[in-house]
Length: 95
Image (cartoon, rainbow, N blue to C red; front, side):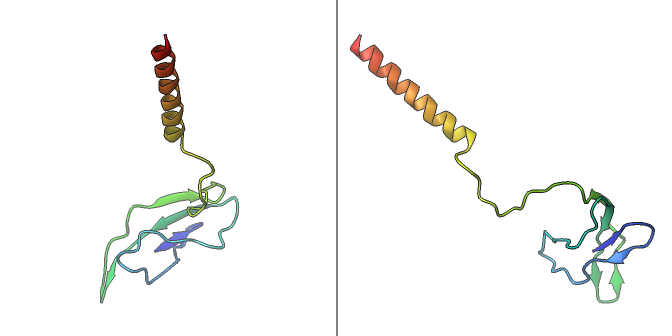
């Protein structure tokens, strides 16, 4: 994997395992535009570079391992709907 800030491409990681789908880029310069590309290497062969992906170091991406706070909206909606249904059933059965 390579990256660049200006004109010159630099190597970010030269030994990413084949099954790896994520890579954490550390020590990025704030307020900068980075471009990344990937190439496959096998013995003496090197593939053409991938499409270039641009990322701003000012973008905020939440950490992937943080637990969510509270219940998801569909769960809350299901609980509220169940309570309303039971209240309506009790009301109609007493009338």
